[in-house]
Length: 273
Image (cartoon, rainbow, N blue to C red; front, side, top):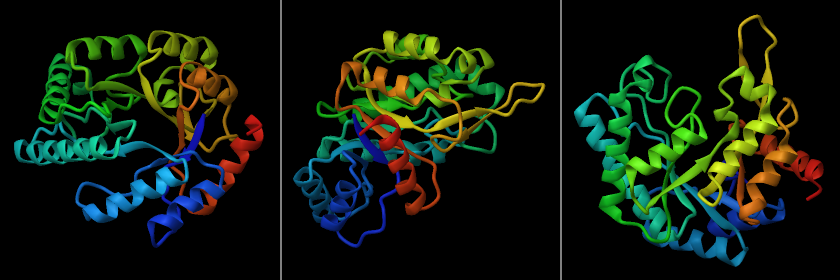
């Protein structure tokens, strides 16, 4: 596997950026520049990554291409297309986004409308539009699963890919985001087996974090740092790398470079890397 972090670490040039990741024992990165960056600078970062044997796992979009506001939807879709063009140019494993909420104040929030037929149709259409504008061959566009937004599980992901019907569509995996029920949490090994069996060969990059049960009388789970929850990280990474030995596993949602460094060292020690 190729461990990575979503932080770019503190750096002031491409060479220092790549070496900082390599010295930490990392083999993959989230690309730190977006489509608005200087083209020469983009080339510098790509060259530095290759020189240090670091795979560019993800180019992020993180915009609501399903916004109910037509002007915002058009603007966010244009950005997603440009990000996919960037991912294609630098040969990233994937360009990743979430489906986006079709209603409500929070662009990636949980709402009843997210489960509607309208949300499904809009998501299919938006992914098709983005892929058709670029027609990527060196990367793919993928949706990260969310607890309250499609795709929420492996069967739904397969149905979504079938309806999208584009070679340029792939799978991004965040197994913690898919643990949206008590059954999936407590039967996590069985659930993970089901996920990776059904999506075998389609997954391009994975997020790595932990999850804990808050032990209240209604089901409530909380994302946390690796080691602070009860996710079977060993089993997760074993399944993730069974098909692709150099699968990117990206640690995310920490708050400082030092937290990322500590988490990397913890995961490395725990997995014997």
